[in-house]
Image 1 (cartoon, rainbow, N blue to C red):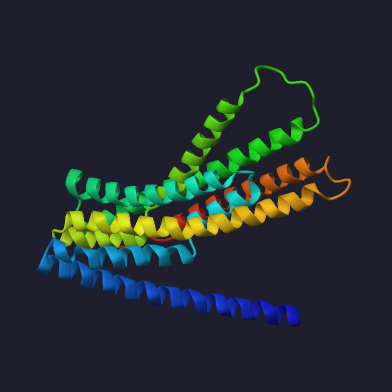
Image 2 (image 1 turned 45 degrees about the vertical axis):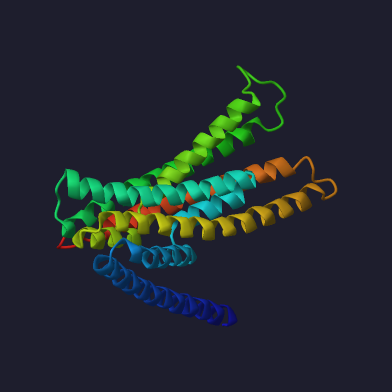
Length: 284
């Protein structure tokens, strides 16, 4: 009974937290709309208010739930990467998210000449591609972990052995691909701001607001990445100093990496399934 009561309490608090986050997002959207209207009335000198509100929204957006943060956190906890790689992943993912929103609206409105009320549908299509790529990344991490587990303990290598520079290059390509997969799903707040900016004929103000949002998100999630990597390294150091466990530590880390890959794969598939199950909005 106590377990069920605790689960109900957690579920209730989580629901209340989501309601609070949604309420705060509405307040931010109202503030962004008001700031955009001030820019329209007073010109570029009033843009700093819009930039400030957009930056604050980006920081707040990093606190709420999201598939990008789930993928980043899972990767940093389960994969052996240094702090520089973790921060690079965070900042690249935030940059890709902002860039995707800008390019999606630019192409939809200027190139394809899609009406503003239908331009949001272009981002929905990119969202599906993002979830597919996340699932593929999970599969790639699973295969890599299985290969390390299968090769653990073997002393002979077949074929050329990659040097440090090749490994580092592949690692950065992997981080870039993961950041691109995350960022291919643009932030909903960035899309709304861009659509509003186009409606008010304030294109560059909208672009500046999105850049500020991405910067705020990157800094906030970057702080989380620092804490995550620090705690993982502390746990790793303790595990490697345990008596008699040195020979098993690499295998344990590879098993953890396998679990992380599975989690990312399941996350991508579940998000894709949920997105496909949502009926299309009649306006889009």
